[in-house]
Structure formats: C-alpha cells, structure tokens
Length: 163
Image 1 (cartoon, rainbow, N blue to C red):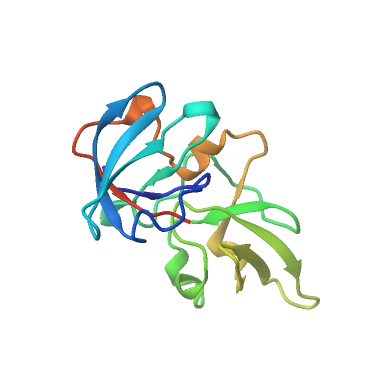
Image 2: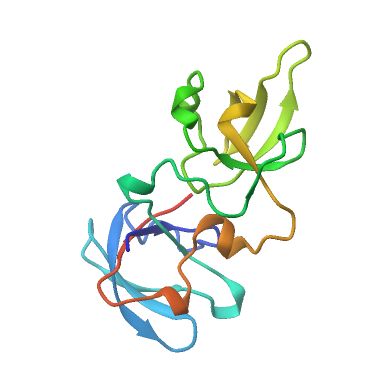
C-alpha cells in the first residue's frame, strides 16, 4: 500500500515531500520508511502515543470512492466533509484543495447559492454540496483519513507525504 504524510506529521522535510517505502515495523507503533527522493530511512509513528504520521495513498481505482465513514445527509456550515463518489462531475471540484480521503471543513455558505466554501490544507474552495459527503462526528481519525496503523503495516508498502 502506498502512503503519504499524515495528519500528525511533525518531521519537517525529512520525507522530501515525496513518496517512500515501508521497510518494516519496530518498537510499539513505529515503522521504518525509506523515502524515494532522498533515499533516506526514518522512523514514523503508526499509532505510537495515538499519533499517525502516514496515510494511505488512494490507488487510481479508489480515487473517487467515498470513505465508509461518510454520511448521506447534506453538508452545512461547520461540518467536516470528504469528496463524494463522482465529485469530478460537479463544476470544478477536482481543482479544489480536497483530495480523495482527505477531510475538509465547511467554513462559509453563500446567500442565494447552494455552494459551500470548504477549508482544507490551508486553502479554501467553493464546492457544490453534491460533490461532498459529511464525516460523522465521533469517527476515529484513523478511519477518516486512512492512516497507516501498526496493524495495517506490511513490509514493502509504498508511502507518500500526506496533507
């Protein structure tokens, strides 16, 4: 499985902002990752102290899949959201900051319009609400963003820097 920098990343540029390979697990909740760009190997947290430095990279066949944690209710102000199946058919949703599997937050609504402004990765973008699905409250962070956990770790898994 390919992965990238995850929600708890705190290691600066040691990943070279690129992809890498999991070489194996060590200690409790840590994994060795060899980064492609630099060839360097570093330890990353995959559950140690509840932190997840890596997320799975969606394969092309999974790129438009809705994570199983998505709700069918319409998104609104303050909701956490992910891209819906078929999001590419709605306006210019694929040019926004949300990527499949990543979570954003609805930060603004527009009077007289159904479009919603979503913040993700330090950027904001107006989305058609049909392109989004709500992430239910209480869903574990690991389930939402597909983080790598010690249980999901396998030697040779591909990794990539995340959000």
